[in-house]
Structure formats: structure tokens, C-alpha cells
Length: 611
Image 1 (cartoon, rainbow, N blue to C red):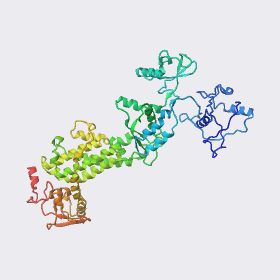
Image 2: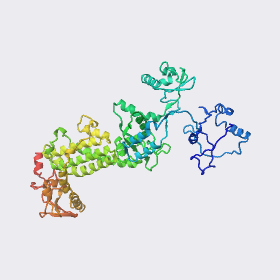
Image 3: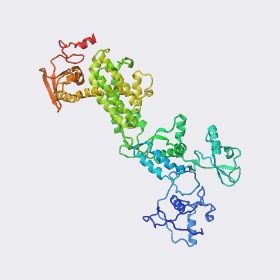
Image 4: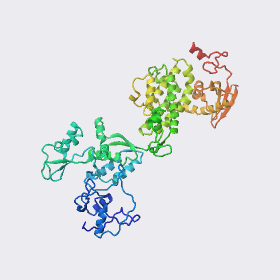
């Protein structure tokens, strides 16, 4: 073309590649467009929608861009404007779908203006009022919102949500206004979005519509659709409106790449139309990788099939428990070994539920004793249950599911199975069914089962419902609220029991020494002498009978009454001697008590129970 070109400076051109001087076409590249815009150059793009030159380039009009390259080279030669040409390999953009080379072309588009009515500043201010999990999310989205250019809303696709804009067939003026949008919206509500493609332009406009520029009433439909990110960005308008909930939504959560995607595409329309962000909290999670830390893909064959590899082998709750066991804020690895480990932990939880259901057979919530009639030991563990529930609920509210997993495993395996269940085994198995002591423990077990079901339901959904129904409940566990058990919290009682329970570890080590030396079988075959090195008298803190329950032994003495010593263990606070009782063992409860007259006889308690 016979025209003078000027030289411009652009930061995108550097000296580390090529000559440092490049041809610039403002109509055919983003960097070129920005440089041209700064210099006041109009974008020139003599290429049509089919990739052919237009009449703006008469010499090549109608020819495809790539097909015309040899002729353009020859044209430059003929004009004496080409010093040299050769072929070389370099990076060039290609379509991800067709794998064909692409060209960039400046075209008219619809844009969302980021700085209209101080929208950017208002959005940045609103971001500060949102809870971001993890906390670094606010830094990421702020930096993106601060620098984001205007949002190109339009796309040229054959199918999508249409932008209801029309073009005057006489003068080419675009027509779209509030009246035409409302008219089209009403038609969509009545007949569906497909009418844009099935009806004529005249039928989609209000009767009597005329071009604001030339007065013509002849229009054609535009070919632009909305960016799908806009579709997803306005989803809260549809979802919350359908549910009759007031915006904003409680929570948005997605992968860590969505600060530039859905989190932003949702923010802009909500701020523009409502003046508030669409969410109260935004949670970002990492990605699931294979057990070696590689992204999973079909081509590599390193993926985990949730159905075949997990659910059909372990059950759906194992998959849910595995997810809860990890910190979702980071990328997480998954493999058969990690799933196996979680399945073993699940078995411990399930065994806890089995123990609870088994011991509650024949007991219902209606049979629970009043709170003030419960035994101190049971009240102590209900106090611990209260703290456990409070911690778990706080973890749920903070989305710290891996903390819930850890607390749940610890509570089931140590607090309950290792300690409390062991302590009350004699009471549950050997006391009379209607005795106050057994009823007290059954009441505590009932509360524990109900609380565990409700607290684990969001994670172990199927298991919790199964246990809930097996316990005779009619309403679903998912219809229950999280329990508020603060009134069970008893700090004084906890301090009293904890001061004694610190001896339990010393007792268990002393008992284990006796077992290793083959001097002892069951712990109920033992008596204990416990001496506090600071002079504390344990029997003044708790009754001797309660101490025997806590340590699961037949006798507790402040001083050895002359019994044989089986083993000894001490720490800086306590010394413990394991003693051999002289009394005969009860064949039913295995305890050695003074009221057994001869071998094979039952103790007084067991006689009264069996009649």
C-alpha cells in the first residue's frame, strides 16, 4: 500500500530476540493494538470473518490470508521493497481444537467497563469485607482486580446466550435499549431462549421500533453471544432468587485458578447491579494429584476412578473421610495406599459406633436418667464430649475438616475406646440392667452416640444415617441441628478427674511390666498400691470404688496390706506397685472381692443380678 509508516516504541519488543524492530499491525495483535492505541492509530484489519482479504486490500481481495503469502512476497519483490526472504522455525499460535494456525483480528466487541462509576474502587473495598480461605486469597484477587482491563463480554459462537443487539440494515447502526431488552426478556420467559435463533428480527423487537440514526425499521440480529464466564458469574442471581434467599451467598468455593475466573466474573456483575459482593466467604482448594505428585490424566493412566477404585472397594464414606483427612488448601496426593490407611481409621470409628449400639440395645432416649442423677464418671466424660463438640463445630465453621478428622480419630480411639469404654465395661456387662450405675452409663453412651452421629454426618453421611436409624430414630440425622452442649461443661469435675487420670499411665505401665514377666493376665487380677510423692491422697479426691473403675483393677490401696508385689513402676510424681489379691476371683465379673467364700462362687453383686 502506498502510504508512509511511522516508528513507535513498545515495551513488548526486546533486544534478546530478533533485531529489536518489528512490523506493527494495530488490527492484528494485542500488543500491536495497545501500541497503536497509545499513538492514536486506528486499528486497520482488512480481513473478513472467513479469513479472506477485503476490498480494503484490492490486490488480494477474496484470497485467504495464508494462501496470499507467496503473492505478497512477489508483490514486494516487484516493487523493489524486499531485500531478502527465507524460511525459519518460530513459535506461532495455533487453535487448540483444530491444530491449525491462527490470525488475530480486531473486531467490534461488547465490553464491561471496569472503571465506570468507580466500580473498580468499590469492588476493591468490598473485597476487604469478604472472608478469604486461605487468607492469601485476598492478596491474589486484589492484585487481579487492580490491574484487570475492561472485560470483553461478547463471543462469536454458533450457540450460547445471545446479546440481544440488532443492526440497522440501512445504515449499520447498532440498536439496543432498555425497551428492546425488556421486550425480549419477556419473550424468553414465555417461550425460552431458543426464540433468538428461531424467530425473525422483526418479531424480537417491540412493534414500531425504528433506527435512532436513520429511522429505518429494518433490522438484522447480531451474531454475538455472552462470554460463558458471564453466564456463571450471574448464577447467584438465579440461584438465590429461586431459593428466595437474600444475597450474598454464604460460600463460594473452587480451585485456586478461579481468582481470575469465577470469583471475579461473579464479583463484577454483583457489584455493578447490587452494590455488594455475591459472597460472604470464598474458599480455595488445591488439586488432586496421583500418589507421586503428578497431575492425573487419562493419557498417563494414573487416575483414580472414584467409583471403581474407591466406592466399590471401600464404600462412599471412605472417599469422604479421605477428603476430610487432608488440608484442602494444598494440592493433595491420592493412591491406593493412602485410601487403605483411611479405611483402617474408618474401621476404628465404625467399631466405636458398633460398641455404642451394642451396649445400648434395649435402651432408648426416653429411658435416660436426669442429668443431675448421673454418676460422676459419666458426667466427666460428658464434659469431655461437650468440649469435643465445641471444637468440632468451630472447625466446621472454619472449614478445617482435617482438624475434625484428627479430633474424631483421637476421641474415638483414646477418649472412648481406650479409656471410657474400658472403665465402664464392668458396669455395662455385670451390673443389673435397671441399676442406677448401669443406667447412668447407658445415658451417657446414648448422648455420645447421638452427638457423634450428628457431628460426623457431614463427612460420614451414610454411616451416620445408618447408625441413627439403628438407634431407633425416626427422623433423619440430617434434620438435626448441631448440639449445644455447653451446659455439660464442668471445669471443676474435669480438674478432679484429670488429677487422678495422670496416674493411669503409670498404672498401665506397671501392669504391663507384670504381664511381660508372665505374672499377670487380666488387669482385674491385680490390686494396686499407689503412693503420691507430693503427699496427695487419691481416695480423698475420688472414692476407692471409682479409682478401681478408672484403673480397671480389683483393689486400690494407699498402703500395701502385705500382698505379694508383682511389679513396680514410678515417675517423678507417683509410684505404683502391682499386688496379687488373696481373694478368689468371681467367675462372672472376674473381680477379686472379699465377699466370695470359695472358688467358683459369685460375688455379692453378681449373685443379686443373676438371682
